[in-house]
Image 1 (cartoon, rainbow, N blue to C red):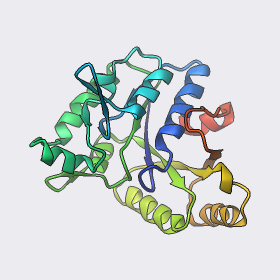
Image 2: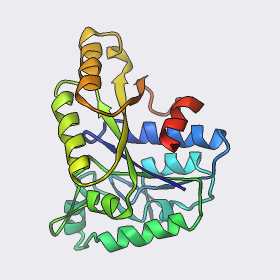
Image 3: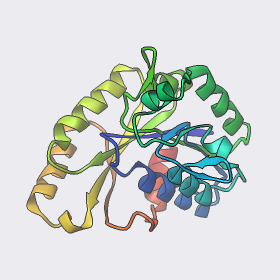
Length: 227
């Protein structure tokens, strides 16, 4: 069983776009894939249920017949840091709740269990706890999505170092580039710099504007994740 955690250099860096594309490609390759989005903020309410768009998109690609409540057990309506949203609702986010939710997802015994984080690697949960502690405890492999923009070199190196210092295996990174910038020299230079700064392979360079589309990962790329 492969356990993969998708993190990024910052929020809105393309985690969901990459995650749903990976899930789609893995399913097409014949794998049983389960998904988990433990925490979300910025949800809409439908029939007394909070629905997170990221979790919904993952559900559409996975093939373990999971409910949205199972995929995303901790959800907040306000589009703010989850631990602040929890404080406003007089709630507490605990690592145990996240872990118990993960056990339910693992019970599907999928070939690949893909978990998408929220924000960046060191997402605060409140009370001095971080989502990264859950990843460390469960020893998931990490795929780092890098938002290619001004400042990405610093963000990428610091995030990678933090992952490694936590004793977690970061297996590869994905360059996420807005299509309008994909041919600019600074994007090419940033990606070249990242290949020199990070001692892990670049899995893919993704150029997009419409995040509702799904890219396809090749068998060769998927095998890098599965080995």
